[in-house]
Length: 122
Image 1: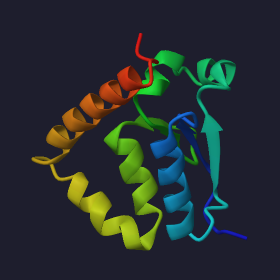
Image 2 (image 1 turned 120 degrees about the vertical axis):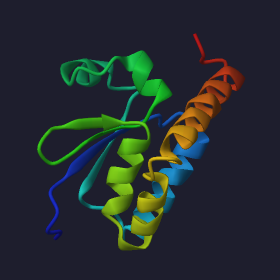
Image 3 (image 1 turned 60 degrees about the vertical axis):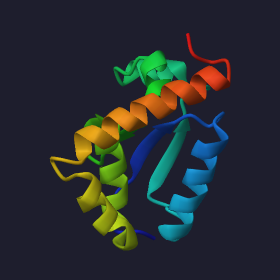
């Protein structure tokens, strides 16, 4: 059992890189039994219930914390990384005020390119 409540990660399970990153996170987090992984390509109704546009969910990682608050993009990654001791320094680093906006811009660009390559950019 875990002492941390479950968080929900809304991610693109069609994306091979996203699936690989999920497996890496689970390995580093010791299986991550406190994380529910929700495939945004198969749960559009569930996304809408939480106020997430399915189109937006393809373009950014969304995480719902234990209190039901949503965060996306780098804030979602930071939330997840802070839950794993070995990733906490990286969460701190990418959250630095001077670095975070640059990384966020690069992340958005990378996602658009990936979706375009896959023929899923509308």
